Image (cartoon, rainbow, N blue to C red; front, side):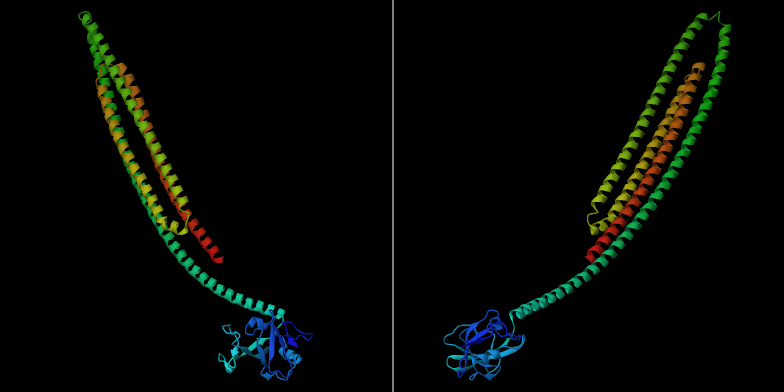
Length: 440
């Protein structure tokens, strides 16, 4: 007869351990015929077909029937049952003994004969659904433990990120303060350079006014000399009229010589005036070309600086590290602009000296034209008008240069402000990105 649980249960909700055994009344043991794959015996792995059940929960089963053994093996789900199992060692030599405990104590064996081994196995009663939920519960416990460990790791990482973010934020603020101080220092230096340039321009303007006064005084002296020459010429003409009958031939020769000399002096004066105008055009062209070169250089430097700034936005730490270098570049740009202004002022000074010399040459040419009163008067009036036009043009050039210098200083200040605003915006974006990464 066969008895067992097979992993199922009866109508009263009782469950077995998945063993199918044969038992005859009077036999001291029950033979295990089959181990159900869905029972606790198969899950434990200690009991195998061919083993013998000697006792159930310590009770002798010699007088038990198959039904009694089946009822003893069955019970409430989750309850335990302890079986005493014997195994023939000679027939199963080399096979594993399972997870059961040998009789006589845990981990110890006791032999009843030269070929038998006794072991004690404790099994849980349960249906397939019980073992399904039991395994699921064990999996959920494992998952909870894993998630708890991951949560602890995430909390540790969050703490590390928080400390790193705080350190980065402190370093960024410190570097921003350093950059702001550097920019303020550069701005103060630019203001000082601007004041020095204004003082130099004022000194040059004063020198120009002095030179203009000297030229006007020379012009007055020349007019006096020309008037004196006119008086002398009239006196000479009176004398010539008195002696006209005696020296008519000599008078004609003198008139021809005087006309020739007048023409030569007029041509010389025209050549000098043309040369002066040519020099003035050359100076104006040089000034225009220098202004264009300076504007091109400034635009190019501004574009390069903007491109460099756009490229350095790639990494937050690298941008903060290079903020000081960008401030140094701006300072070098201001220094180069100041040097160019000084060079231009030196050039203007040299040009003023050359023009004063040219005025002296013109004065010398005027002295040679004392005899040509009428012609020299018209030519000198024209020369005076041209000099006035040149002086006004030069004054306008100086004013234009001063405005250009002020505009460049203003552009440099605005460039510093934009740099500072860009640095602050980058710091804000970096802080926002750090906060987002921390939240994620």
